[in-house]
Image (cartoon, rainbow, N blue to C red):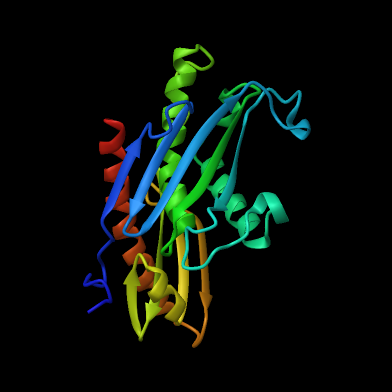
Length: 237
């Protein structure tokens, strides 16, 4: 039995609330247990300097944790500059979204995804990706209304989840306590067609076998399929 009573293959309770940020072109508040992430999507009629003149768009992300989103107060990135962890996470989110966005058809426009942890209990980066898809979809609906694009430029859904080995058992969707005790910790990003965009796995203690890897990926796929269905329901598609 897990510390919150879930089965090994069970997600935490999940809710997705599109349009949470009133003034953003797209937004989604995701709650996965005690991890709450707000993702907003901003559309701008410009691209970074290295993209100018190519006729295609760009999708990028920024990630931060509010000072008391976790068990202890952390210093704001605005005071110290983005730390290594924040930079690594926001690059992951940006890579994940660019894998499913048809940037060639966007024109020279940028979608910036701001991912802010309101409450952090493990899995903030994976929750961010799941919510970023919803926020990006909404932003593209806005772009269609403004006649910037003619269709939704998302090739397929994308979502992410954590898996790991805790006390010699493979578990889905680790919370903070489980993550801090994990022998293996892994983040999996997968599309609606079942293709992997990124797999980040680390043995924190004992190395893991190919068989254990297969079981963890199967757990991740099961959870992500459920998240894709929640995304569709939230968007009404």
